Amino acid sequence: MAQVRRHRPSALLPQIARASAAFALPSSWLESPYRKYLPWALADAARVSLACGNEYHRKDATETDLLRILDMYSQLEDPYLYDHDNDRDALARFLLRAAGEQMIYQEPVFQELARAAAMLTQTTGTREARCLRPGWEEELLGTSLSHYVGIAQLLWASAITCAGRFDPDSLETPGMERICAEIPATTILSVAEKHFVTDTAAFRQANEQARLTTDPLLRRYEYNPLRGTPLVKGYGPGFLAPISQLIPAKASPLGIYYTGVAAFGAAFAEDLGDLFEAYVGRQLGLLHDATVLPEIAYGQNQALSVDWIVVTDDLVLLVEVKSVRPTVHLRLATERRVKELQRMLGRAYEQIDRTAALIASGRKEFAGVPTDRPVQGLIVTMEPFHIVNAPLQRPLLPATTVPVTVCSISELEDMVTITDTPVGRLLLDRADDARRSTYALREAFSGHTHASNAVLDAGWDSYPWRDAAAGKVPSETAGAVL
Image 1 (cartoon, helix red, strand yellow):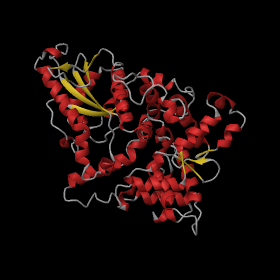
Image 2 (cartoon, helix red, strand yellow):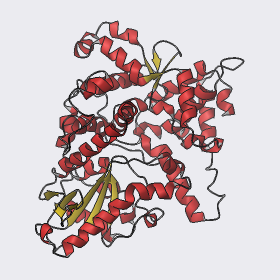
Image 3 (cartoon, helix red, strand yellow):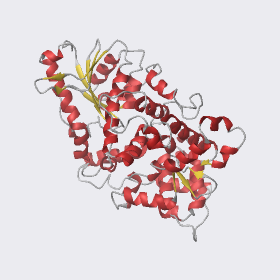
Image 4 (cartoon, one colour):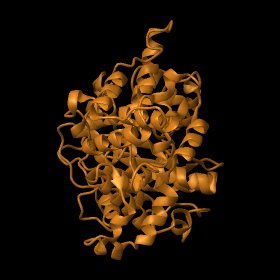
């Protein structure tokens, strides 16, 4: 923190924004000088400068100064890794913090953006919505979802190509007529100002409100308000994007979730959860040579099975959908993390085991589900729960009689497009490997060929710049730099 505060924010923040734009994609991070220009390191430097920086009696900042700051950041150690009686528990908590800090920047942007329309405007829920009714987009976002995502893409493209800046005056320059014919300049600016832009005073207030702990050693693992408002004003012409990777995240389903909950409360979350369950069913429907059954009601009380049952030639897959995301207690690996994990995922394990027992018992309501093949469970979450399948985490959740894997919706979107091997066989091979079965599900896809995802493609095609390169980046990852 002291190294950052030596420099005037008006000098350091543009340096950070320029570096973030130059190394915008995961493939470029490890090619940056000394592999130091990582988005989470840049984001923390920007946070400290915005929250604690001072313009008076401070120095300017050069590229060398920024590199020194990033080098010092890379030398930080987890404060509690070696200060714990239980080494296994200390390691688990370190991995949770590191994953929460780093892996959020490694989700495929194309999927994140395409999923917004595919789920929120192209999927039909099973219950009557309370918030996601006709007109909700304009009420919440100030424009259609298509234009909202298009504005995010435009801001992101500008940040990457203009050293981390978006200048509203650029909308009046020659060549911008085609863009403003698609989305009026007044809409672009009003939506940007309302949803994407903050200033120093508002940032500082949000930063204080988000703090869960006063421990400065845990600061870098906490929520960074730039995730909610990735552009700042007051630092030169137009708007500055200290961390350009956070711009498209604002228009992802998670970004829209937080915007909606802030405006409409829990009802928005419930509507989104219903759509998410139906969206998972649409993705499962892309599987070849598989029968997808919806949840089955049974007994006098009409209790329900898992959300989806997938029958393949090789196995029966019981799919339970949870529209949950890791909370701050998981990101910080606090003492409450175990209760939080059990609260969010525990019932899903129990539901899978209960459904598996009902099928095995030959209960009449499940007569359409074969009993002559292996059974596995799959818990699909809206956001990744990192290391949840690992031996450091799995024992914290209910034991089951069938193998259960937790995966994010992004992983499911990849799995259903595999073309060179049956998905049932892939899952069985993974379960038979004692080590690989504890990894993230995506690891099992390595080396396999994929078709395009028709559901995501339809979502992407609803956006104004669907043929532009901005936003449709490869689903590459640089790997976790833990």
